[in-house]
Image (cartoon, rainbow, N blue to C red; front, side):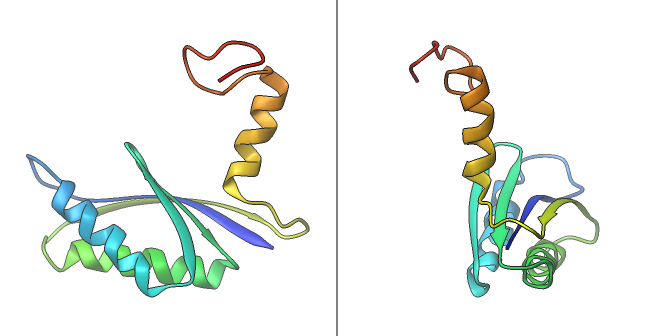
Length: 110
């Protein structure tokens, strides 16, 4: 089973947040999770929700150590009957499209 989460953690400040985001992402290294950071958040794969919650809590706290206000958004897909990775979900959409799921992709190609 795989629990997939979408996490966005940021301080409530004006200006660049990249150093805070870097600290949140670095906090994930202490956990048995796979992750990929995107422009809008980080996709996290964990064996179960307990590990996912622990990792995301650490990311939240990493930002909170530097800011007096933190905004965290966590969305979870906890599919308990099938072992599915995040890329499998993208692959399924691309199969229906017949192409990569991004702008500029052509049918049958990337």
